[in-house]
Image (tube, helix red, strand yellow):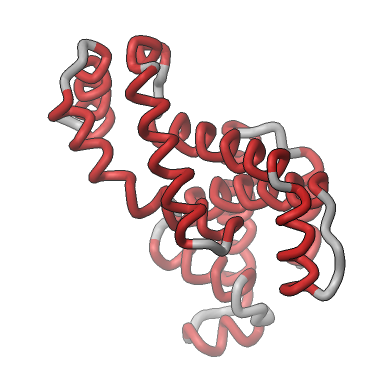
Length: 197
């Protein structure tokens, strides 16, 4: 049974009120969801509360899970919605925190944009992780380490032409993945602009 089919079977069982199936998905996604939420809250307690509430909400609305094709995407969407709600409820607190961390006041709208950007970044990272190992390495060396094509070629002992070809293929795949999974016209421009070849 593939992972997708296994997850689909678990969702159907949860839909019928199976707590053990819910526990399986809870254990599978608890830590990755917590890391995602913590990126924005920078608070252990707030992150734990939001993650806890996400899973409670999913259990309470389990009868609507039949329409969910990808549990992970659904989970992140629920978390994003709760993060945005948290910002709207606590704008004063968030402004104080931003003054302490950034030295400037950050509005609720700016925080909301940061969360949405983070959501898109996660989708891009998922795409990078789907690349073949060599292509993934080249994309990460270019985008994360900011190495030039020559530097990558030298480090990997391959030609600059091969590096360029692999990088183009990798970025094309990431762009297609992003377009498939979200409405990202603006984000694509922001993401790909620094890496013009």
